Length: 166
Image 1: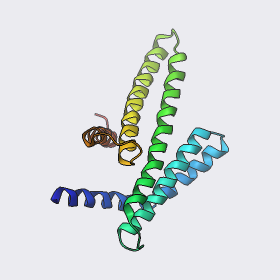
Image 2 (image 1 turned 90 degrees about the vertical axis):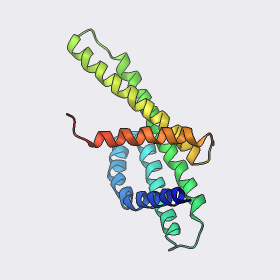
Image 3 (image 1 turned 90 degrees about the horizontal axis):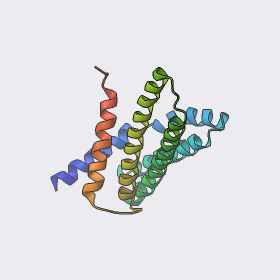
């Protein structure tokens, strides 16, 4: 019972922390539209939609709007999962581009190999995000432990990117 209450408190804190984040994605969306980068447009639209629906769910959860917040959160998470899926496909496309452009030059080949390795890790991370997303959004529910492990890894990865490299 206490664990459920703690989980709810963390979820509310995350939602509160996301206030205004949808505004940050609008300039990137405009830039993507100007450059005809349609996968980026789709990603930003899905992400912004998630953030806006999540904001509405937060208002419902805070009892400022009288509506059950749980189905609204599930709907928002479907858009987040779509956003993650688009990013997964973009990383796969980037990996395929990089691996097809390998040269015989040793210096550029070493740099390309490092980029390819980074792309592989991003692909892995986004696979885990999609697996987690389809579960928590209710699109395809599997075991909670699988979604939890996926979430722990992706959260750890995101946290490690915040620390300066040694």
